[in-house]
Amino acid sequence: MNGAQRLPLDEPVRQALSAATEFLRSSRDENGWWNDYEVRGPGQFWATAFVGASLAELPEGPARAAAAGAWRLLRGSRGPTDGWGYCPKVPGDADITSWVLRLAEALGEDDDPRAGEGYRFVAAHLQPDDGVSSYLPETAQPFLERVAPRWDAWYASHPCVTAAAAGLRGLPVRARLLDRLRRIQRPDGAWPAYWWPDREYPTALAAEALTAGRPGPPSPYARHAARWAARRIGPDGAVRTAQEPRGSAFATAFALRAVTAGAGAATADAGHRAVQYLTESQRADGSWHPSAWCRVPGPTERDPDARERWERGRSGKAALGSLVLDNNALYTTASVVAALAGAGAAVAPPAPRRPDHAPRA
Image (cartoon, rainbow, N blue to C red; front, side, top):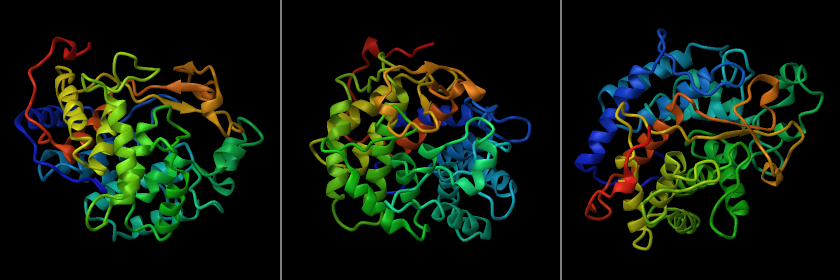
């Protein structure tokens, strides 16, 4: 995990990670791909890159073997200069390509020529404001214009995509992305997102990117982010969101990552509470209740936070203006795996189990 301060794992966390690894390994299709969400069909490249990058955070063993298999599949797909997209039928974008490259870096495969082409692909999405866009007109226009004539908002820079790309050590324009992240951090310590209603996601990735490779204490931007994330973690360790008022494992996982990136005494207790909530809310099959809601803004919708109403669960062309969920629980489970692998549970002694941490069906 780029920028995270790793802590020792205690036994409940080890057990949770072992069960989650088995769930994820057994969730691959017959060809070894992970498939989740349902927008233009299942997000095969997207899920495989993200799950693989998350499993690669674990030590050598079944998890990293599965991650290496994901890299081999992704490496052999698409043309040598193409980026990776949502699925084989959708053009490459900088966000999913960044997650493929994060997988490659975690496995030490970033010197592979295919990774080198991926870096060039992501760098080409740099915009004049030093942020990274999801798509470029020259690669995505023929596909997107089947749905609508203009996609200005999707060609603009997006904070959440910029944060994901800024974590890439081998990206030649990384310094400009980090400058952009410093400029757009909100006064409360969080970062905004385009594709995600939960700000925990971009905040964790930005904090990690700004701390990665930094000697000494965490970046002041990361410490500010950690304080924001700690306030989001409730007394029972859960982050509650508009979509998941009972508690979101996805948002909690990324809040934990933000707390870990800006680790300090003031946020340590919140980090422990989040670890405890996550280990205790794991389902019997090793997964977590799906809560990784992703939003699909309209093609000219530059500020999706301003939209008052979002439909849920639509697909195809109707997905525009909709929130979509990782119904297979792969994205949520992988998010928790990466968070627990990076944070561990050594922040404070474990507290007694409470009834409100019972797993959800």
